[in-house]
Length: 294
Image (cartoon, rainbow, N blue to C red; front, top):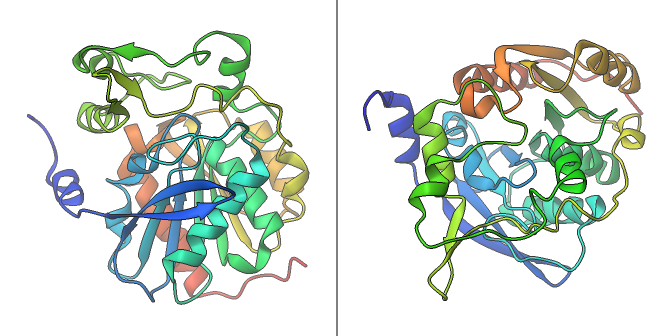
């Protein structure tokens, strides 16, 4: 593919290991990079996404960290469930953390719906985490994928394709954004489809993941006691007002950092800015003492 930067090619050449853990009767898949027994970072994808949304991001942290990226149930290569809840997704994240054998509590990075899972995990399992980074998760509003799933038929049934070429070419996010780096979009789209035994291609997410009611994450914000930071995308869903609300709910001690030019899915349009922001936070947290938030 033309115009693919060398950093992206090099990142994808670092192949992760696929691992599974059992949580409440479901096999949960996750990807692992690096050696066990090192400081950890765990990435949590958004709604209808999967662990490979982080495949070009994770290798940037391998010099000092071991990395895991989860497929939440109903997503990617993990099992589907009869019902999905925020609390159960938190338990899946906790199980991955335990299985990954980091040498200390890891940092959890969650995007969009995955940010809601990250918030709830930090509140429900405070001893498991050293810090959390929430990426453009608009806590005072319904997650955009959930909104679309409940209000339209976009996710009402699994779509089937005889040929994967068309859906890969037409791949778009919910919500859509103005810029997608084509080499990233194509890589993620290709990894978002599965070939079933009947010879048809289907998206890897369960169309039922957005429909059931679930406990909203806003009540969890004030319960977080570990380090926390919010990355707000300039053209994303966390407006300045929402950022201020979350800042106040987090006790006015969490940085709110805008990613310039970013749409809601910064790993698709400004991946190097996203990597730099996360690296900067981790470097600061490694060399400073956290405030007592208990």
